[in-house]
Length: 73
Image 1 (cartoon, rainbow, N blue to C red):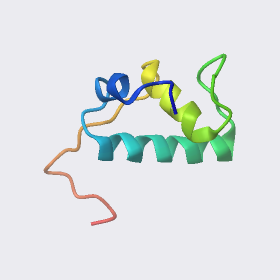
Image 2 (image 1 turned 90 degrees about the horizontal axis):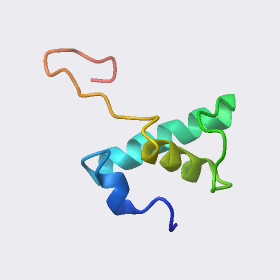
Image 3 (image 1 turned 60 degrees about the vertical axis):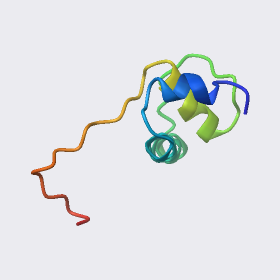
Image 4 (image 1 turned 30 degrees about the vertical axis):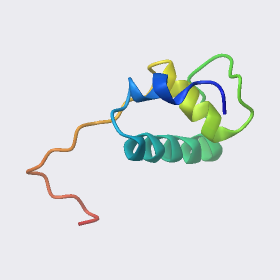
């Protein structure tokens, strides 16, 4: 994967773990719904398209509320 670079993606999302998590969830969503946010993609695969959306500023990571109780806990 050459585009977008990991350095440019790390400026958008602060950790590699979070980056992988956001990209994987969005790739699954793209595969299931086909709801594309960009007009043109360089990548053919859904994970690459998700990373391009992160790079373009279309996706971001929500900060977790420490006081909230989530259903998976």
